[in-house]
Length: 392
Image 1: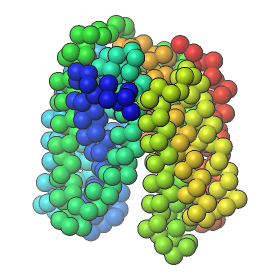
Image 2: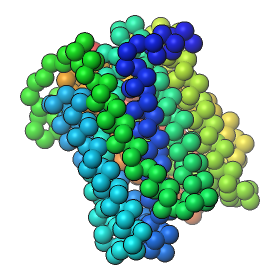
Image 3: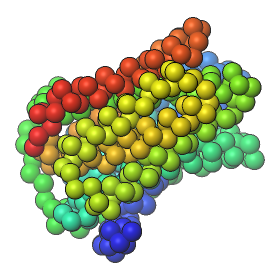
């Protein structure tokens, strides 16, 4: 772990890591917290679904615009979103507490999503400057590991707060998290910018950096397909667990997926992998996709758990490589916007995969697993087919 000790000894590294932790934990908890709070306030899962849908739409659709804003004004501009985002979340909490009309609740959720700080994308662009050329990959690995841990811890902590206190308290606790992370990141950005000034160039008015980089477009296509696979798996896991009479055990395969991802992300950060980022990204997509067809043959909780542990390792490998690869396929001055395009693509893919998986549930779990496997294989095929576009 010497690489990680060296990283955290460098100025600003701990601040950036803390801001990433706050961001990942908040973003991983919003969905469950909003659903629980809105349902408790209105008694309607329909309104809760509309609220989380409005939040997600506002977050995803405007993500590239927020990223472009930060790219044009520098990383410290991420703090501009802190107060509006926290205020919108506070409005959502107040609307739920006073049992206001459903329209106000949904509008507040949409506003909160529209103002989400591009915290993780900004942090990713800062890690190379904070960590230095020799430890940049280790910084990206820290970012990836924190994301995996938050995907497990966020919903668990939210559920505990909702059970021990109330759903409204669970949502209220999240109000300052991302805002505080954005402010911390702005503080860390001052010395990092001084060490690594970026070069700016005009953006395409419509597609921005996406219209300028063929490599980024290839990565967006891969993330869309990977998102569909993950979305289908998130629906399939509860169906498989419920068929065995133990629905809560659906958390097991998803947790093992995260565990596999953490392990490979940590390993990547040690510098043991000597291959270029492009090759590690391609390998990650293959390792993720290759075992998933086995789920179709063994559609049991034990089978899918074993498969997702291996697939998660591929996800961890490709995530760290992806963070590095962005610095090669887009201009440094457009790095924040570039990652927001990828998160938007993955979010859209997950929504599509989850919706399609739910529709296929009537035909049995095998159809859902076929969808998940096919989407992952498509992502690997796309990455391999367009590998030349991923060259710097």
